[in-house]
Length: 326
Image 1 (cartoon, rainbow, N blue to C red):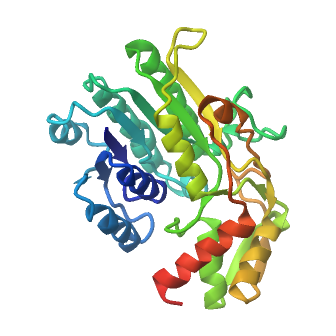
Image 2 (image 1 turned 180 degrees about the vertical axis):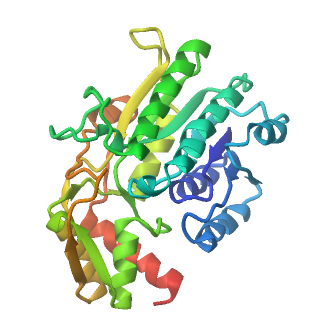
């Protein structure tokens, strides 16, 4: 099978490419290698992927439609697209919303326009986020809940992305699935995420900032569970729904909300070192609790999470110590 995967040098993109390459598939990987976080980490991931001859890399910015069109004019035989490229981060969207508009909205539109040329396309996967649930207090989150009240611009771009995908699915009969990921962590993770940031600062003896006095709950989902969900879903394209549109939305999470302070305690125990904590107020745009109901994904393509934080955090820290030699 032939795949186009955007955000291939990113955290989820790297792991998704790795698994599909092991299965023998051909992958066209796209990434712009921006400097939102350390580029060296992205290049290290990319070097591992490039070692496989079935992987072809394109350094491209998805916001540039003319270059996308030019590069892929010889690859209209792509069968599956997994669109992971996006500007991530709820807090950063408060500082620079324009890059979210450029990547998450314009970039998605460009990919969707490109998709119309791929006549052999079987399924388009769009990476959404649990952030779309906004301030909803009824847990666990399920895909029947209304998500029209985002509380961060990042969440607004992801919800808008889902609507754009539905529109293109309806207009052009493209099988599209939106997957809402819940707080992903694990080896090769993003430095701006909690597991990575806390581990780094604790080892360096620096203070970690903990919002809302630590009274926050997150559905921390290990990267292998996320990727297994993505891959399983990819090979089960949606059938037309009640509105005759081949479109679906699923949660991909651990189905278990974990207290943030318990998360930190496991990191401390694994590192053998206590954290220096600065408790600070809740930040605008952040939700207090997340917890997924992924039962519809289990029914549709057999998704189930298998790794909880007591197992996943040690696996992440083992990778961190080896990669950074600490």
